[in-house]
Image (cartoon, rainbow over all chains, first blue to last red; front, side, top):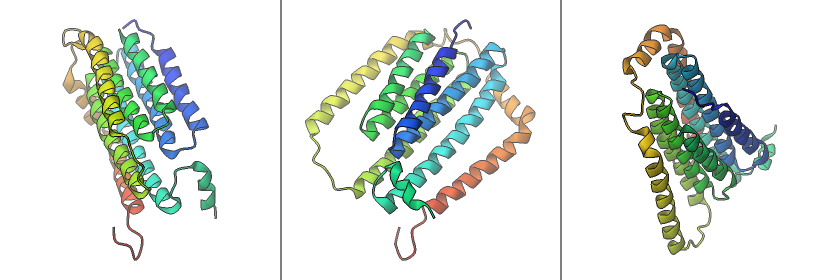
Length: 99
Length: 158
């Protein structure tokens, strides 16, 4: 496999990071988190292809995806609970939860 | 050809970040997942591709859309122009058809290298049997956490 996917991995990771740092909507933060996870999964699979250990890389990718979906489910449950309390999704209002 | 798929993937990732509507953002993320699964197929990792397609583009999207619909049901409903949504839906469907039609020749069975499907299971159940159990425990604790988060408050019916 001759394709060099490293720049795409970095761009995807950078987009996820950019989203996490700039957005204030909780759903958008979830999107950023997902983009980070997808960049990581792609890096794992691609490194497995490069090292000619695709089976091992795929088993790692499966684990990352499984954990990722759990993170998303918990995040969405938190969003739901937060929205019930504050009626919006702005992260600035999370400061009210202090103490 | 992987580059072309990745270019579309990055495009949808940018859309997922920049689109003001959270629903459209989540749907763009689903497109990112679908395109990533195509990349996995092109790289010769079909097991990860199938898992990404079913979980990333399927389950996560359904969960996110359900949450958005719960949240929007609590808000005062705005008047939505139906015609606009119909046109947008057809435009999105046409765009997806064009993309997948463009990419499909490169994800045909002949272009995907032969893969030993049982080998991934062999790695999971034998080589990595030790860390599979903690992963199951993590998933179980996450499920319990979700149940705690979603339980109704005292005095309120669910």
